[in-house]
Amino acid sequence: MTAQCPQQPNAFQELFRIFANRDGRVLEFEILPPAFGPILEDGCSIGITKKCLVQAFVVARRIFLNSLMAKSSSQYTDEAASTPVLEGEGGEADQRLTIASEIILLFDCEHLTACNWRKRRLSALFTSDLETLIHALDTELSLMTTYLCSPLHRHTKSPTLWQHRQWAQTHLVRLRKPDFKGVEDLFQAELSVVLRAGELHPRNYYAFTYLRQIHRILAESGGLKSEEWRVQFGQSIIRPTLDWCLVHPADISGLMFLLYLLDGVPITALRLDTVGKVAQFALDIGWEGESIWTFVELATRKFNLLEPLGQSPPYPWAVLRTASLEAMHVEIKARISWRTWLERARIYWAAEKTPTI
Image 1 (tube, one colour):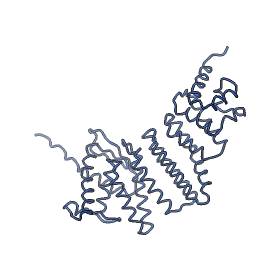
Image 2: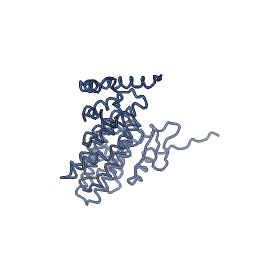
Image 3: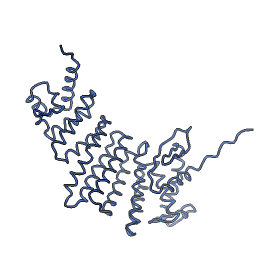
Image 4: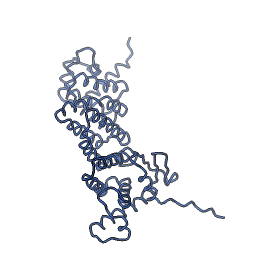
C-alpha cells in the first residue's frame, strides 16, 4: 500500500495566522532550504521556504489589488466584495487586507503600493484618539523592525522600508513629545536596530543614513536645546558605534557614521581617543584594507589631530612617521590619500619584525 503524502498547509493562511497573532512582537523571518519547510516556528523565529512564500504572496497580492480596484471602480468581484478597503482600524475585512499588505512586503520589500497604502491607513487614524494612533504607529514600527532585522535577502537594505520607518518614528516623536531621557533611550534603541541591519547586510548605507536623519529629528525635538541634545546624543553612542566598527573593520559605512558622530561632538579629547583606538586596532592586527586608513586619514585632517603629535601621551599615529614631525605634517597636509598611512604602517610593521642586535 502506498503511503499518502501529508497535506501541505495553505501558505497564505499560515502566514496570515502568524501575522494576525504577532500583537506588536518583533518576529524574525528566514528563508529555509526546501527540505526543511514549508514553515517552521520557534517562538518569534519563523522559517519559510521560498516556494511557500511565493504562494502566499500570489494570494495576498490578488486580495490586495482586487480590493484597491474595487474601491476605485465600485465594481466588486466576489473576492473583492469580501475584502473592501477600510481607512481605519477594526473589522475582519480590514485585518485581512492589512495582513495581505504585510505578506506582500515580506516577499517584496520595494512594493510601493502596499507601503503607501499602509501610510494612508495610518494617516486616517490621525482623527481618532491619541492612544489608538500611538498604538498603531508602535505596531507599525515593530513590523518594520521585523523586516529590517530579519536575515532576508534585500529587506535590511531596503530604502522603501527605512523611509517608512522614519515616517512612523517621526510621527511618534511628535505625538509623544518625550523628555531628554526618553529621546536618548529611543536613539539607543534605533542604534541597535541599525547595527543589527548592518551586520546582516554589510555596507548598509541606507541604515546609517536613516540613523543620521533620526539623530537630527530627535535633536530638533529638544526645541531651544536642540544643539545641546544633538551633541549629547552623538556622544552617548560613539562608544557602542566604535565597538561595532572594530568588529566590522571592512565596513566603511559604519566608520563614516562614526566620523559623522565625531564631527557633531566638538570634544578634542574624545576625538583623539576614538581615532587613536581605531588606528591602534589597525596597527595591532596588521590591517591593510582601505576602510580604516581612509577613516584615519579623513579624521586626522578634518579635526586637525596632527597637532598633538608631540604631546604626551603619544597617539598611535605618532609611530607611523618615518621622518621628522614636520615632514609628516607637510606630507599629510598635501592631501596624500589613505595609502600614505598604509605605507607608513607597513614600514612600522617591518621595523617591529626586525630583530634588535
